[in-house]
Image (cartoon, rainbow, N blue to C red; front, side):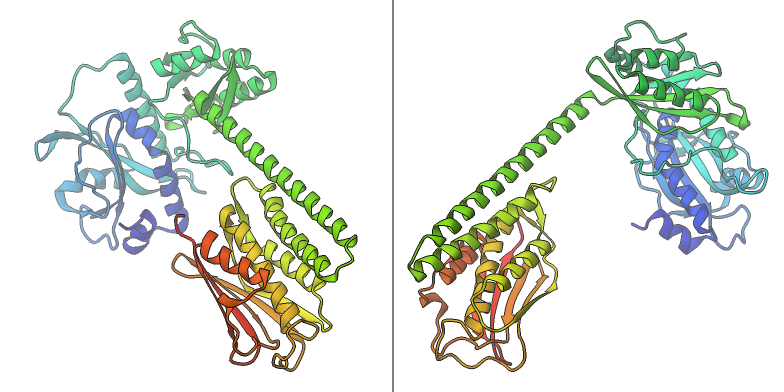
Length: 510
């Protein structure tokens, strides 16, 4: 299905600013649809307009959550012309809301047609009409409207006139998400003085959660909200935003807390024909949502603290092993303890990163770079060896990162110590000419992470078999690669000299 922008750019002469305005309208028009109890279809004239009435293309559609839809099928992408769109053509050409005409039938569904011009106010006094909203109401369940429905319809007509005037939708505030109170959450209508003329049952319930048990009608909502708020500054700020809406401004949304409850509020000015007549306040009780958010934040903080303590404990273990190594006279035992220090330190790096993250995942490139730097500093080799990384590991879950960092630590140490002069593999081939270099490359392909650790050193001894090696480091690599990581590991000589270890790790569900 093509997007609004795709359809508009392909079939119309609308510019980027026009399309952005239609996007903002489509982001806010669920409000108008619910208040109208009607489907809304956004129609734009197609290029070229060589017929009368014009042909129109439907680029967006929304169904009401407060009433049955008039359309069972999606209308987006449909191009219509002739008598069927005469009402759209009149609204577009005359820049006025069209409400004349008899009901029409869609199959067995009777519907009432209305057309609302969509105007964009620019430097011109009246602005330009760029599209038309078709407001189509399913009449099959028509009945005598209640007080709620009458207030909804009156407010819908005010907003429709603002669409035609070019004052709705409001500008979007930076950083503001699309999550906002809807009509069904709670609706309050204020007159020009700021007094409540209507409050829906859900709005009344939301204020009851804040501690107001009387009826809202007749109350000055801004002052009432200021008194109820637990934080005086928060209450004053919310009251100022409500008063700003009465002046025709479009304030950002605001949350109010009182008596353990949290209510999200959004104030919209009502200015049909440019005359401020009051405002619309949408309220949503988000107490349980915020309670869960706080619980998650507490849980995240606890997990980060655990990782921090694990990191500290691992560093303590490494320090104890380092002290023990200094007191051991046997060179082989001292080297074994030093290797253990490096292994513990590599795991501590992962927990250090997790302690600063908000989830159980780490940006792995930084960890690899630190492990590689440590490997060149501590490896017992007489020649200078440089390390570099190609590609990116990206973000990895903790269960993969902990095992992978140990595997890479062992492979890097082996590459430096046994691939270049000063290592233990007497009789191995001579290293390649030039400075020693170890390259760690990584890329993702089809839910797999492919990692290669390559050097230009001596290469593997003749008859080498990784599965028969007695070194502890290689045993750790094989065990972790095929066990914890559920992947594969292969060690082989490079065609141009040196050694490479190829590791494949699945990244799918574990």
